[in-house]
Image (tube, rainbow, N blue to C red):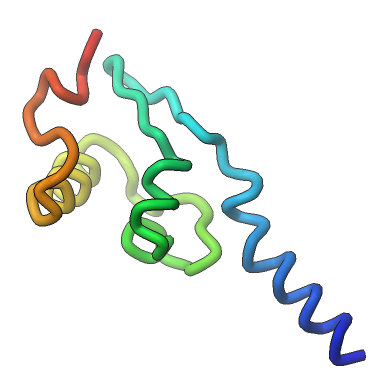
Length: 88
């Protein structure tokens, strides 16, 4: 019984990352490599409300411009200027 519980817990925890798209096409010519971010950050809660991922509440232009750009600046990695994200 304990092994079944552990297996179900593992499936639940890892299903979010398994079902997420590798690269997400967003508006205004922005592409987001979810797989690369998940592997680099190793903590879904840096963006998502829950450790297992899921929809980001309030995600949109303002969220991305604040959260994503701030993270890139803090980590000294990734685009921080308009045309570095908006390539089209």
